[in-house]
Amino acid sequence: MKYTMNTRVRYSEVGMDDRLTLDAVLKYFQDCAVFQSEDLGCGIEELKKNHMVWFLSSWQICIGEYPVVADRINVSTWPYGFQRMMGERNHTISTPEGKILAWGNSNWVLMDTQKQRPIPVPGDLIDRYTLEEPFPMEYMSRKIAVPKEGKQEAPVEITRAYLDSNNHVNNARYVQIAEEYLPEGFTIQQLRAEYKRQALLGDHIYPLVARTEEEWVISLNNDKGQPYAVIAFQEKL
Image 1 (cartoon, rainbow, N blue to C red):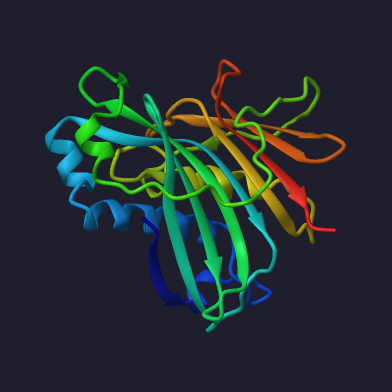
Image 2: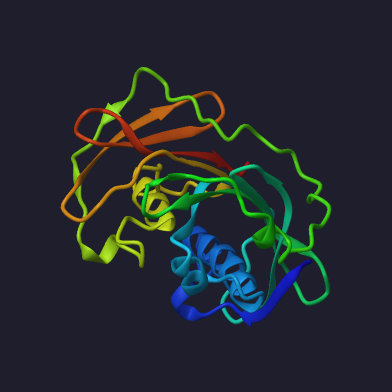
């Protein structure tokens, strides 16, 4: 079942060019998914009662056109598959007339919060959703290869401002951090993000920045060189 929220691009969600930021796109997609689950009776608090939480495993987001401040937009999401411990979702942002401006794919892992490990998605949870057809897009690998050579940047300390209700760094925050290392004037056409471990209050992130033929790849590592998240950006030509 598709879930849609009709909204308007707020001034607080645009960048220096008066267009919706990538960070705002991620938050719209994330919020829309949360609202659908809440309305179906299997939202955050309901999952907590059963010691469960959905953790984002990966994003792939494509931007055709960034809407500008005050534009009216429709943000939609729908699940299209469950793979044992994982849920798969599509997302779109469109104009009221139906023109698709941005689209994406996300993969979520269901976790047991007591045992801190993935668990199979229960049948009664799956039954809350009606699956739709996958969005017609090029689905790229969830795994992002990190080049061996890259520039090591100064560490970033995790403060309370980075945390969400699960007390770890919100997925959109990793993307914000990684964007800081893109060249000036870089317009993002596609984002891929792979999430590997949780950064907590007081941790330090050590960004490793590399350039491939097709993408800028930023690996946000811990002090042992292990990635919290790997973010890949493709430039709009």
